[in-house]
Structure formats: C-alpha cells, structure tokens
Length: 333
Image (cartoon, rainbow, N blue to C red; front, top):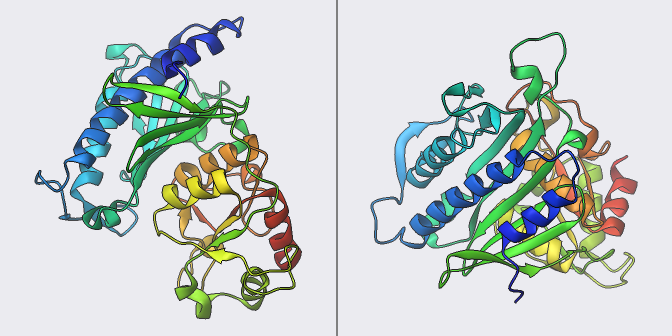
C-alpha cells in the first residue's frame, strides 16, 4: 500500500489547479472526518444501540434505520461547517438544506446518500456513503436554490463513495481519473491503495435482482438472458453476484468488471419506473464509472445527460464495463 494519504493527494491536485482557493480541499477534509465517524459506528453496530429501525418513514416511503439517521446527522453537522457549501440535499430529507453563512458560505452543492444499504446492516453486509458535488449556477437567482441542485450529472465536479466493510475505503473522482484509498486504523488515515482505477472493458459477472424477473419488460429479460446464456461475447455464462447493497455491488463491478443492473419494473409506476435515486445514487456512481472507462445508462441514454425533474427522481440503471453496457443497449435502445 502506498504511503500517500488522501490529504496529500488532494493538496497535490490543488497545486495543479491555478485558481484553487482551498475550499474544495476543506470540503473533502470534512467529508473524510464524517466518514471516519460513520465507520466507527458501523464497526461497533452490534455493540451499540444503533441496529434496527427508528419507527419513522422517510421521504422515499422507506423505514428509517437508526444508522441512517445517525449518518445523516453526522454529515449535515460536519459539512455545513466546512465553509465551502451553500446547499445540501440528502436522500433522507424531503427538501434541500440551505447552509447558514454562520460558518462561511461557498459555491459548492453537496448531495448524498448517508448510508446506502443500511437495511442490510443487521446481518453485517457492507454498506456505504455515496456523494456528489456540484458548483452553484450563478444567473438570475440571487440566492442558491433548487435549480442549483437539479443539474445533470455531467456537471459534477466530484463524486464518489465510502465503503464500510472488512476495510473502510474511499473511492472518488474529480474528473481526472478514479483513485481508491483504504483507511489504516492504526494511523487513522486513508492511504492510496488503488491508484488510477480502470474497469475492464468486458467482465465475467452480472449483478441484478432476478427476483424481479416477472416484473421486467421483454427487452430487459432478453438482456439478462444474454448474460446467462452462451450466445454472448464470452461464449460462456457470466457469473451471478448480487449483494443487494448498491455500493458493494458497484465496487465489485468497478474492480472486476461486468455489469450491475437495476432495471425499471412495473411495481414502480412513477416516472421512469426506476428504483435508484438519480441525484444521490445513479449520477455520482455513473461519473465514477465513466472516469474509470466504463459506461452507465438508464436504458434509453447516458445517465449523466439526464436533466433532473425533481429532487428525489428515480431512474433505472445499467452500469459497468463498456462492452457489457453496450450489449445491454442493443437490447433496450
């Protein structure tokens, strides 16, 4: 493992940017502190009273997990003090969160899923935090608002995720490739462990919840059957791997190649009939995938080109190796 810390990596990037103010570096510094706090609680989840549900329902209509609520509070508390943000948005809150200028106010928008896969935490499955960072749009509105948040993913200035599992990892991109860092608990630092991650052009694994097979349209079934059969580009069935925790499934796909899919289904009648949130899940992971040489689509076009219609919009997602996603598009387009 490299001796380069994530802070050193950030500062090196800052030096290469002539107009850098240091606020972006401060933003990521506070994000990293938040992740360390969340990782500590996740690692002790079975010993602390943080397992199970709170009894509340969030804006998505889902049961709120205790660790969800904790991670959400930690991120909001830390990030509003970074002095780099003007707005936050989270999966758990119905509306955007304006940032007080009490701690200084910057130009960045921070969108996040505080603890993806938290329903699996009771059985000790990997979970994670997904984040997306935009810059404010200056125009006719004097104050930052919802229009600043509803930007296509192609305008992200950074995105990534923290994975809490056997090791805690940070994987992120600023549009100049993808790097992964692993937390060394003995020194309390994220060290560069996966430099310049590139996803294989063709994989051997497909990842999808086949329990929904009966709810997919015929094109989606044919696409999945393609990977299960022998008439694909490998001439051999792909292996099925599905954790049910988006960050865990995507991280494996990023490193090993293949494809992760959450297709539209007829049990979700809302726009797009998707399950995953565009702004805090699909868009940031698609930015990471593309920067690593992969692809991401909703079945009709590029995820990063979608103009969000509302804060909690959901979309289908097919993401992973370039050739495997292209093969899916042949069935769906």
